[in-house]
Length: 458
Image 1 (cartoon, rainbow, N blue to C red):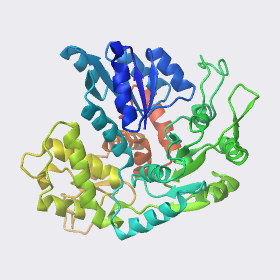
Image 2: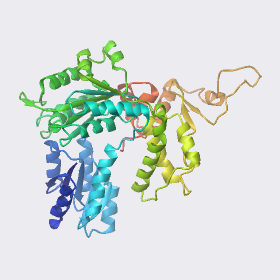
Image 3: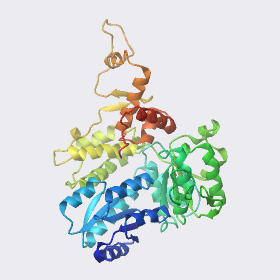
Image 4: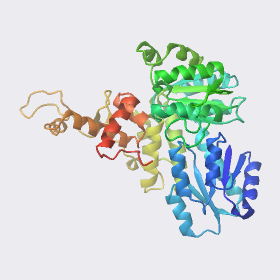
């Protein structure tokens, strides 16, 4: 656990840092947000940052987004008024912590961040088999490829492997290859020198250097552009990288874990993924099952998320009712654990009983195999108005499409699916049956036309 504390805080920094150190955290102190950004650019990563409420927290969070640095920000202050605390939360801080620091509160924050990223429930026999293999290979430095549908917990498994490895005290750095535009991914991985390209106002170390001595996760590695794949392959074979705009090679010591929700063998056949890189990554392969294929884990996972969101929203913890348990066990969960997590968040917020009732869920929509949406509650039409048979299960929905262009229908389907996935582009692309690259291009078109895109403000 790496904690960065930003600000003066009249000497209370040392007290907060001491508590964190006693709890096993590595602590970095920066005088202000500018120094903090400089440290982050130069590879001094953090899992959590505590910022003095007197600092420009909103601008700092926006700068983190612009630099594609993702970590929770906690505001803290001495005798700060309520308005300052509320403003910090409105500007994007996850929580506000009053100072002088309370040891139990600091410990709870550190534990919550660690637990959120590392908790893995795996009591189902199918998952137990996967975990046993992960335990066996984790201590080695072998490259691991984690496969599985979107939302099955591939990053959680990656962190689990890191924490079981000899590199557990080193950094764990994750890069989502699907979420970062192709033009920026090379800089994200290998870093750049000042002036290397337009917008490179300062030198920044890449994720390879930031992960030195630890683990580098390449999430959705199948979305990496073929030209970048060659440079990536050389980096993991030679164990050295070259920043953009530099001619000097830098030695790096990282353990590579990659994930994919696609059949890489098919991508290799199509020429979309390098065969030599595939063999280099596929030293050990772990296959995560879909949530529906590990039924005994569904209720424990649902209860875990219910407790998590109850605590996050300062609400009492509630058990799932018997009907709610039957409901979650019987649902298809095409979005896997991610869909379950979102469903539990809603259920916790709207539940009105002492136990989370089945009516608190909103699971009436199901997805067909081709990605189209059908209403589970809508009865299938068995005949036409004239009494003849018909294969159309929802004629009203079809008639509503008459007069609309294919592009309009496609746009609405993409936007509605993305909204359903809470802005998660990888999940939406998986449901729609298109590549993340195609989805990104479509969204760029819609954005240019002035359309609001779900997830853009996140």
